[in-house]
Length: 122
Ligand code: SF4
Image (cartoon, rainbow, N blue to C red; front, top):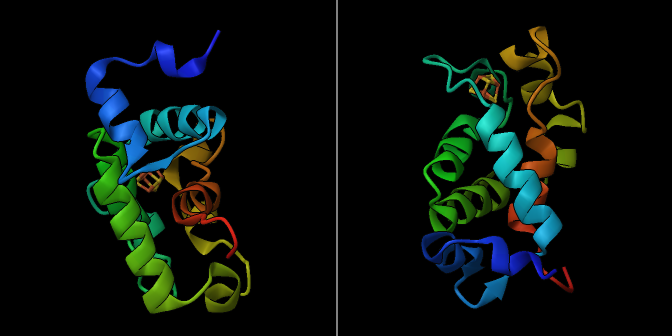
């Protein structure tokens, strides 16, 4: 079964981000991870970032099914702060600070940002 057929019309519109289609597996990962986020009032993931990114804001946009804005936020963070590996030496301060980690496992923030900023040929 084609995964795209599982989407409702609103989701399908968001699924294709300005003509850029998203792999079905990545789409499901984003949906699952965003749904696990506790939407913290003062998100430790964002305050922990040494490059002043706002992963909580990106996840909030995903939670609202606003994929275009999530991509824009992730890309802005990507280009202003540089690659995650450079900004924080791949130590994932955001993910290690995630409150959800006290319940089961932290939100996969690094993976979310990588999926949203992935472009072929980069
Ligand atoms: S700390 Fe974790 S649970 Fe809280 S907003 Fe950030 S990603 Fe979501």
